[in-house]
Length: 292
Image (tube, rainbow, N blue to C red; front, side, top):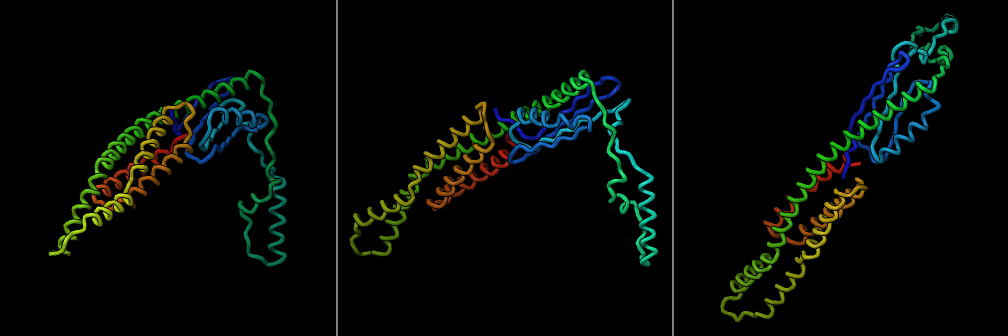
């Protein structure tokens, strides 16, 4: 069954007087892109966490944030070295005086000196707390995956409905195609008789012209291929390993077939049907952008 690439998951756990909060959200993306924000104490585990994300999702931009709140949760905050900041402030003011500059020293100026800020103190987390973090992390991913599946189910029903619409329209085109040749033959006969009034009509030459026109406007192959693409599409929607990229390719092929039908047949009713099919394909393409 297809899955959407958009969703949100959130999980919380209280452990050792700290509240562990994990939020995970995902949006459309051509490939899998992972963004992970964690407290500094979890930096050594980032690769492991990213591996768990990539094991669960195939496509989409997945953003995961892990935060600690509560007692002792602020150990990851950066520290400000005021002594170094004062030294920079004095030096910059001396430069202003020495060179007669009119450049006031601002917070933005001082923030450019990285050594004013010292890295957070290293903190260690025991195995039990790390196990709680991982459990909360996996819960948030499961909730996100569940939402993607629910949205995927909505996409599935919508796409099935549109494929049904296209199938009905293609059947109307199939039924109309032979009538196009007959109407052309009738119009051609009437026109030739009108232009050759009083002369004998060459039925063989007329039949040859009709045959040439029928060959040029024959869309049997396109209709058969379109039917095959629709069947593949429906099977792909219900398969376990559905991939949005495969659906994108099928939609391109379907669009190519319907464009060929439109260019071959200059019949007004068929042209209207072609426009209707292209409209449905456009909506399917929009929906396909959300599929994992």
